[in-house]
Length: 67
Image (tube, rainbow, N blue to C red; front, side):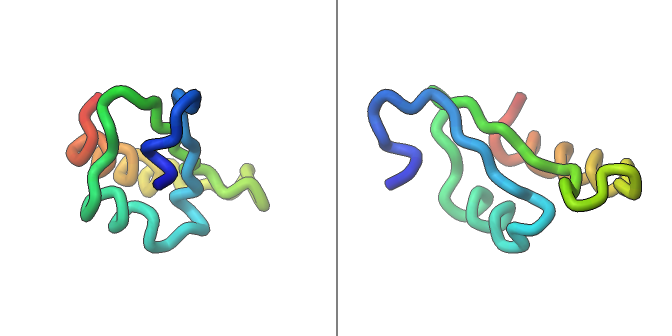
């Protein structure tokens, strides 16, 4: 439902706290005509971010939805 809303050009997802979000995107895909904003830094403590984990998540996401 969320990805089919008219007038919405982009959707942001929390890929840090949303533990099942990446699996959901993998399962259902994401429309090519929408922008996906990927939250990969924990906003509760941005200074302690695991950069390697963030990059792995982005590479996994790229493999699912492309660039």
